[in-house]
Length: 167
Image (tube, one colour):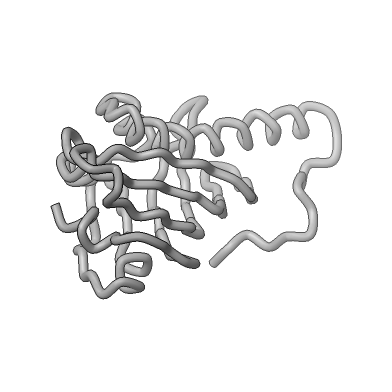
């Protein structure tokens, strides 16, 4: 499920190392586009993180506070659902850390720890601070990488996520 290799690079020399380093930066960038696109409510940036047939599974995280959201399938559904829930109602900030990557030819897997703070726009006293492990499968799309499947779990939270995600 999570990337637990005991090393970072698989390539050993020359052009293969350069290609793997480029891929790793592009793979991480997909997750950063996901996070910053939400924070800025930038539909184009947010959508650019996902493959057309992407799946986003927030159910493991939401189960920690008793919510039962559906699996989100398709880039348009993901973008419409998340930005529709937050735009004009919830201010967000995401911090991505502890990123681990395994690169294949045209697929990759990424593990990261993401801290997400969500505050009601009208009352920042109502908030949810979440620490979420991410498990992400990506696919190569030319020179960039796109999220194909994303599973978000929750290590801990504070605040009131039920209110934030109730919409």
